Length: 402
Image 1 (spheres, rainbow, N blue to C red):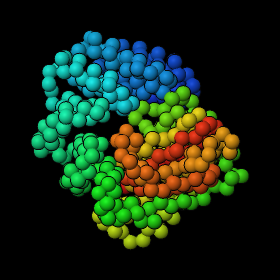
Image 2 (image 1 turned 30 degrees about the horizontal axis):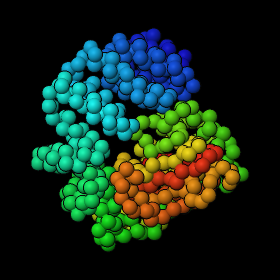
Image 3 (image 1 turned 90 degrees about the vertical axis):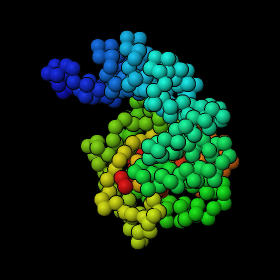
Image 4 (image 1 turned 60 degrees about the vertical axis):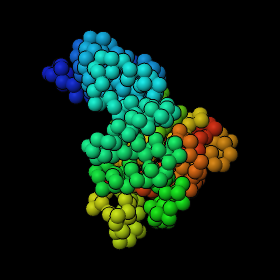
């Protein structure tokens, strides 16, 4: 904090210093001070988009509920024609899956801005997520009649999600296969896996059935864990999960965990890198065009690293990590037997699509977590956890860069 205060005295309007200082306050447990300081900065610079986004994220994690986007609303009162503010507001609402509020805000945005092109995909997504099939069909048809949208993998995934939710897996396959050669195709593979399973297409076994893809490695003996657990527990400050993440009833550490210089974390990273290299060595020759088996990263580098602490009925919703090649779950703490609940409570599971799609496909594999053991698996594979009844379930997770 002293260094940030000194930097701020030299460059008081530097946004990166202001947001960095807020992050330091947050890690120190000074939640309301961080929020108050960011609110003041956003009032002074109402078109500062990074500030509004950072503030909204902090407020969400501190349990502010629907008020977490209030700074966007305040800024729009003075700048109602700012498309960037409207799009930022809508994006935050969609990140926390509040599609009802996003749909209402979309009407206000359209009234202020007119029917600008940037609102078209949002309209289609909201209609689909709210179960308005006829409207969503029309909106997506209009979008994909424009060739440039067929180069957008996020929209292709959203379109396939809508088709799968409404019982049209063959149409989803046609839409997805056209985008597999595009950058960012990682987010298309899990929907393709679901569609192939629904169609009983043997290509699903090629994509996710290979036994090499999911591997368990012992990284710590149980007696080695207490210092790591203590170090990680001290980092969990927030009352709620970050927006846009899979955590439900829990918290997630802020920033890249493996960048920390605490001795337990340095040792953690060393052991993780060793385990990933062992995984890669066991894969054998490359097998293109498979998204995981088709290539090997030359170096072990991470696109993200964090810790998750679940309590109460905490769990991870089923999700994927489209920025990674390989993803992970290292169990470091589990609830006592009487707290966790009957098996499979707390288990890591694979292959089950997100619940909101309403697809009756169960998990293809479930793994009982064991402290000290690391599970590695493709970033493109649906994964989540079965809710616990109570106690503390803590993990370390990371993504390996492609």
